[in-house]
Length: 230
Image (cartoon, rainbow, N blue to C red):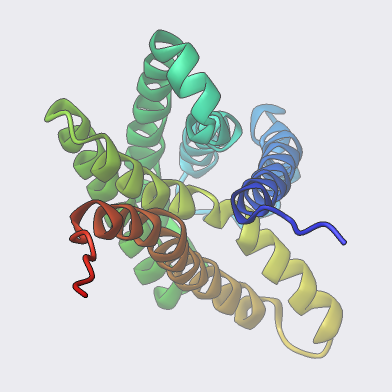
């Protein structure tokens, strides 16, 4: 009976998770963005504020760069691309960063005029603040040459970007499992769950797959040679 190499098993698990994340991110980006560029406000799944004429345009300004960031984000976690095509990695990173900034600015206005309730306004405001903060920390760390710290902050940032995916998953699940509950209640819960849940998953991933392996390697380097005396 052959034993599976732990390193090979971890690599296989990583690519499986990366594949699921990539497919779901691309799927949501392709499915969610078109209604906002159709020119028809009625096609947007979110309720628009009738007193704010620019609400639809602001959501479009958020959806387009946000969808692009969601689409290209997984590429930044491909170690082969990062090592073999560092210039392409940097170009994609700049496009991702600019997309997040534009989407965040639009999201601030969208959150201010949303008619989904105060709780949703607070949730999206926190999301935008965390989105920009983690992006700024990721940029600062790579400018300092701290690649490992940069990667950790990018994991946190993309976890917030990926909230666009988990929000829809929770929303669909809630509507299917709780048909008697009002849409507003399910939507509010889905918004908070997508943010908090993604943050927790990101921190777990950082500890288990980034910091723990580094700590083990450092421990092996620092461990003194064991000598025996007779």
